[in-house]
Length: 355
Image 1 (cartoon, rainbow, N blue to C red):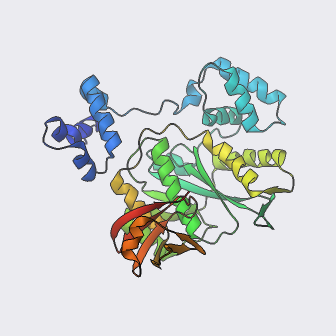
Image 2: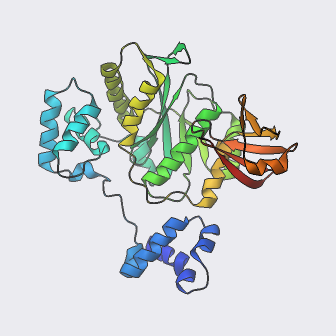
Image 3: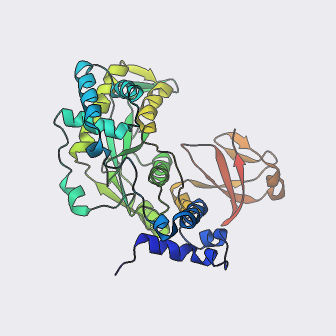
């Protein structure tokens, strides 16, 4: 018989409670992060074994628990202001309530008012997916030109959803369906945001990617070999996701004309996604975090007196003086270019922070 989570957690922290090992040593030898272990110990000391029980998100399935007066207020506001964007309606509702209301709950209530999304897809019902086990990437084309580096381009939007709840997780703006290092890095960002939002330290089992994004078989194999995450092609034919995109497209049409700049366009989607980013209590374990480097580009560079050259720019740090003339490996995030991780073959040397 499978042990309850609280007993599994107790067995993990027991060596620390018995004074045999430190929490940092446990973190290094398990898939549980140090902050999570500290939280478990604190909960155990306060409430005993029951303090280690799994706590569900307070806003999960909150649509069913929403107060009738809240639903009535949303219904009245929505029917009178259908010309407004969902984001502006949400802000108005949120400011008038004494209780907390997530955008996810607000969106589901509005959908229900329009008689949409009464049922999940057969895929989701039959698979009985655990929280954080599977993410879905859906693609749609926007017909609002974006001015990017002096050129007008039609953007392709990648939207990420948690398969077990269909919560919107994150977005990425591309201008081609070709698989790039930026799209690969986006898959990594989905995993990190999911871990933070849902307070989980493990990696997902699958990422289902819209078939319009063609990911090479070799790349999928390399990712699975390193992380055991399956990257699968998926025809994302799901009513709830489709209706979410319909609402988002309506908001786009209400917000923009035929053309806009990249930063404004990016901030539009950022405003959508921020409502889903719950306050993070923990994230992936260090071991799992390192595994995700497989999603990031890894390049070789010969170190010069000026440092490391990437895209015609030099990045330097004091520790590089010891490696002038040598070839080192560099890992960086192309969609969040804030640091360079420097390796001598497989040995991590140090990190260069980019201002």
